[in-house]
Length: 203
Image (cartoon, rainbow, N blue to C red; front, top):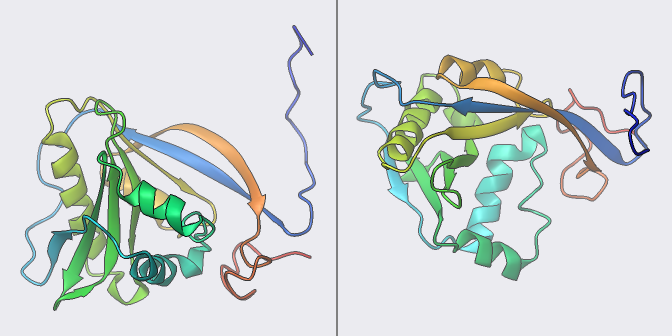
């Protein structure tokens, strides 16, 4: 294949038991000139420095089951615990009336290019501006660091259909696309087959 270009046009079969999604990467190259959202009296944001693994997975599943999030569910306990404890990784809990309504994870492994690695709300909290408020917190924290030159995140076609437009409305711009093929978490028993009907389970 040296010196040749792979023709990627056309249709490619995805094996039964697998799921294929198109991943879109987005970036923000400078801090917004104005806050993305107004302060909220009904919401607070708390640092979650040492997440309990079981509590973390319960919340992860509650937020992500409609979109078949699975990355953190298939990790071994020790690996997940070590990852969440990484000094460059910061987890936060948006709360209403003292109860978590979502998750926010910022990864500063590359301090000049931090990543919003997880961002989401439980179904009951979606709508009413809570998501934009949470994104405003993430953007403000990331750009408050003098090292930051670029803030980025990614979403995919298994995620909420509103996600891409939401991120762009917050000032992120797409810069790359890729295709991910992975074991379907519904076939792995992590979710029931009726979850994420916009990405049907096959096989």
